[in-house]
Amino acid sequence: MSYAIVYDSSTGNTEQLARAVAAALPSEDCVAFGRVGDVDRAALAQADRVYVGFWTNRGDCTDELAEVLVTLGGKDVFLFGTAGFGADETYFAGVVSRVLVHLPESAQVIGSFMCQGRMPAVVRSRYVQTAEAKPEQAARMQQLIDNFDEASNHPNDDDLARLRAAVVGAE
Image (cartoon, rainbow, N blue to C red):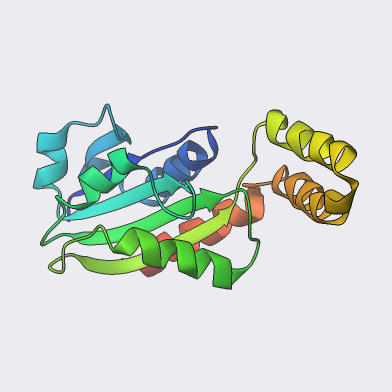
C-alpha cells in the first residue's frame, strides 16, 4: 500500500514525529514526504494512505494544513500532532476532533496520536513578565510556566516509541 507523509512544523517537534512515522514504515512504499508547502501534491493524491502531522495552532491545525486535509477524500488518514499544552488525553482528543472537521466524510481515519512539544523560549519569558506585571495572575502564570517546563522535554523517546507503535498498529 502506498503512503505519503505530509506535516506542518513550526518548531521542529512535528517534523521529529514525521521522521519517526517514516522510520516505522517500509520506505519503498513512500510516494511523498515533506512539509505542507513543499510536498508534491500530485504524489500525495496518488497515495492510498496519508499520514498527516500538525502543530496545534489555537486548538486546531494551521489553515495551510487544513487546505491539504480537504483534498484527502477516499484516503486512509492517520493524524499525528504536537501541542505545547495539555499533557492529557482529553485535551489532545479535543484538538484531534477539531482537526477532523477539515477532512471530507469519505476519508477513513485509521488512527491518531498526540503528544506535547517544546515551545519557543519567548513564550516562557512572556509568562514570567505577565506574572511580574500582574500579581493577580501570578498563580495562573506559574501553572503555565510549569507546563512550559514539562513540554520542554517533548517529544521524547517514549513519545516517539508510542507513535511508532500506533502507526504499526494501524497497518
